[in-house]
Image 1 (cartoon, one colour):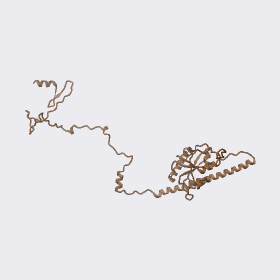
Image 2: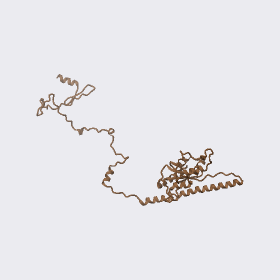
Image 3: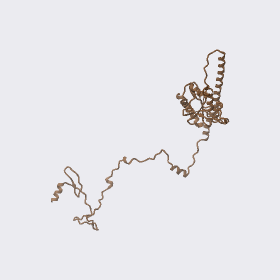
Length: 326
């Protein structure tokens, strides 16, 4: 299918979804002529329907349509039942739609059956089940060019039957167009065509659009305290709160010596744990006994270990040895 046509059909089905509530998979009612034309043109039934409606489909065949198909087939002498036609798909592909129009469940005319499903109430004319009608013109039989009187008479009879069947098929389409919200698919020259919106469907669509303009936008109502609290507590899905950076990836700040000030050394008690009440020591220079001494630092150096005196001046091991001898 061409891109232009597929885009047109997609928009058309979107209008049916907005106005009449159609949803995929779409239910498609097939008639006997449609199945015959699909078989004649060697088309795949379900893929062709899905390309036309631009979505998944669920094809259905009514009991009355099945009776019309089998009635046109010759009877098998062995079983006494008509042959199964080649253009009829198996039930796994085309399920049966059970329809009961009378107490005995006897099949009725195919056209009346389809129209009753499209609009159960003839007066209301509403497609409640959201069916799509798939129909086609009957196949034209090839005639032989014989001049015999019997052949001519037979040809005339066949032409009358074909004309009558063509009128019936077109009558079905005309009556289906009178029901609003019924998409119609038909086969024309090996191509499936989706008809545009009919006049009743277009009128319904315009009415729905005009109602939207009349109603307008709803006026905002003032929120009460309870509603405001509930809205505040209610979490909006999908939104995330702003968080800080990862603490493991942030560089730690350096401690400044100026801000920290001079370090205060805690007092240390002597080995006995005794201390004077006034805090005065027994030292010769009058230093407090509780005053701690500066801790000596030992560092590795090329010339050896260095040590710091109490005044903070570095001294080597040789100086320390001289001091001991003196």
